[in-house]
Every structure is written in C-alpha cells, then in structure tokens.
Length: 461
Image (cartoon, rainbow, N blue to C red; front, side, top):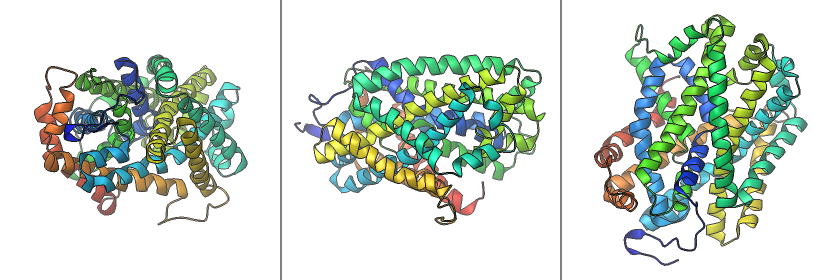
C-alpha cells in the first residue's frame, strides 16, 4: 500500500464492504448486541426508566455520534486496523493503537462465554423446557457453577462466530448482517407488541417512557449520566477498535455522516424496543415491585424466565426472545472477532484463516478463565471481582474511557478536527454536524471520559 498525504493510506488492495447498506447493517450489527438487549433494559429500570431513556438519547445523538463518526473516519482515511491507524495519524500515539487493540482481545473471550449462556437458554426454551429455568435463580447459578456444560456452549458459540469471520468481509460479515439484522428488528417489534398487550403492561410502559423528576436529586442525576455514558461504549462499540476496523472497509464514495446516523437509529431503536419488551413484562410479573425492576444483570437469565413462565404461551415467547438475544449477541461477537483478526493479519502479514485460528486459540484460553471463574476457580478473585467481572470492569470502566479520552485529545488538539472533516467530505457535499463534532471532541467528550473514569472510585452506583 502506498502512503498518501495527510496520513491517508491507499486501500486499493484491502477487502471491504460491497455497498453502503452492507456497511451500515454490519456496523449496526456490531453495535446491536447484549448491550442493547440485556444491559440497556436493566440500567433503564434501575435508573428511573424515562429519565435514563431521555438522558441516553441526548448523549447518543451528541456524545455517541461524535465518537463514532471520528472512529469510522479514522479507519476509512488510514485504511488500517486500529494499531496501524493511530500510528498513521501520529507515530507518537502508536501506543494508543496497542491499548485500543487490547480491548477486543480481552472482551471477545468473555463475550463468547456469555454468548454460550444465551445458547443454553435458547436450547432450554426451544426444547420446551423453559419452566426449568424459572424459580429462584438456582438454575442459572447451577449451570454456570459447573465446568463441562458452560465450556461446551462457549466452544459452540466461538465456532459459530469464527465460521462467519473466516468467510471474509463481503461473503461472511456483510451477507450474514443483511440477513440477521432485519430478522432481529422484526422479532424485537413483534415480541414488544405482544408484551404491551398484557394486562397491566401499560403501567410499565409509562414508567419506561415517561420521565418522572419527582425525588430526582443532583446526585441521582450524576449517577444516571455516568451509567448512560458507560452504556454508550458498551452498546455502540466505541473505543474498542471495531468502528475503526469497519471504517477501513468502507468505500470512499459512501456518505459517512448519514451512515453513522443510520447506525445510531438501528442501535438506539433496538435498545429502546428491547426495553419495551423487558420492563413492561417484568412490571406485569412483579406487580410493579421495585426489587424485580432492579434485578440488574440477572434480569435476563433469572427474572425473565419467571416472566415467561407466568405468560400464556410463554414457552414460545421465551424461545423467540432468546433467538433474538442470540442473533444480537452473534452480530457483536462477529465484529469483535473480526477486529482481532484484522489486527493479527495486518501486524504479522497473515491471511484471514490463520489469523482467525490464532484468534480462536486466544479466545479459548482467556475465555476458559471466565468459565472457571464461576466454577472450579470461583474462590479466586482479582480486586474482589470474579474473572469475567474483572475483565468487564477493566475494559469498560478503565481501558475504553482512556482510549476515547486520548482519541479526543489526538483529534481535537494534535492533528485538528479538520482531519475528520476532510474524510467526511470525501463521500458527501457537506458536513452538517461539523461544529457539533468539533465542540464535542475538544470540550465535552474529554470531560465525559473523566467522569466515567472517576465515577467507579468515588460513587457507588
């Protein structure tokens, strides 16, 4: 590849997406994952429903949009995976590429472990045994407390993910995304409509959609903002090299700004619809009990099976729901693994399949730490965290905010936001959000990153 002026790398020989819609659906598939279907609803329930939703939407169209368009523009302009991209911008920031590359390397293994849990529940409901998963949560704790079965589902999930990545960008990722994303949208809308027809569901809908500022203090506001900003990273695949990698596959003639808007609509829309499935359903099941609404991470694997058990036709709805979750999880794990494969391929000049096999090996080794952390090694903790929880905290609360903060400083102050503006204008006549992106990168986003970094150490969320 030949180097061009301004740190731009020719991508003539690099494989890429064959169409704008292929890129949008693949990037949206990356963003739409467990963060939308599992994490977003329980955070919305915990932090006041409509208030959290309002704050999240405002942050998504400002904070999230600015970071996403920056990362995709970096990827398309340099034509590199995350390590090479930061080096191409400024050699002094090569370390930032390495730090960003470590994020998907650490996330992919434990994400595949959780994906294996989803496959287990999908199997349970599809085989008509959903009632076994209902109860006091012992089914879930007994399952992850063993080694053999979680390992089997974990390995199956890795094989499914790797099979798509091995097929390549167009034949694998783009083709699968064009199929799975529409199915995912239809399932989400269908289950959401059904849930809202249940007796008492509209009270849950009101709690979820309508902001209630009664008893809403400044401290509550800070906690909610911090939670919403943290969710943006998890949900929109930011600061983990994915959007830079996918940006490097994007065609120059495709409109970047409108593509990011479309990705945001997909991502936020699925998250909001997932909340309309889960929050009203739990509200009906619990009679509005605050403890059930604040079930946290256990909401999907412990509370929802009880909800489905209480429904007429709950076995069918439960099966459809876990098909939805499995599709959402798979689209994200594909993008995570593709990012690692791209890094290894570019760094060591290897072809796709060898790079993918190396990635699978890394995922199996690191993923088994998370599997064993709940079973054979459950007494071993790191700073009080189980293995999986430690990897999640390290990546989401420390590494990703640092990557985002340094990226903002690099683009906002070192090379200048014109670096992004010029790339956006390659595929369209104007950049409507130019001023917004400049203000966010230079002033607002760095402050937001600092808030995320310090919050876990000064506030108990």
